[in-house]
Image (cartoon, rainbow, N blue to C red):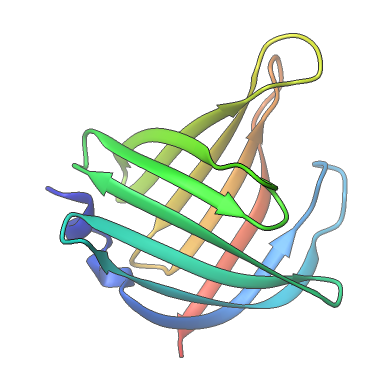
Length: 146
């Protein structure tokens, strides 16, 4: 199955809540959020979203393609990734698209970042993967049709 087919239940315009925390012991900060999800260039899906950090508007984009067994994606976010994008590989597991990328740490091995998309629930989560520790959720974008 293609990623386009798998994510098709998520196609449309959405509104909801973005929850963000930096550390696993931090409380989540919530903001209003929107997303537009749809096919792009026939073989890809774009997930464009907006959220706020306090009063500052933020936005991001996940562009994903491939099959449910061999997906690839790029991600940009005005707050999280700065002036670069992250590349991801992944697959569908338990009806959830799971994408994994890495980014350099100041010292030691690279850290990981996981994006999970649950198309039937209209939920996108992001997890930080610190070497030697359990991954922890940093972002939850929970949406309803809007």
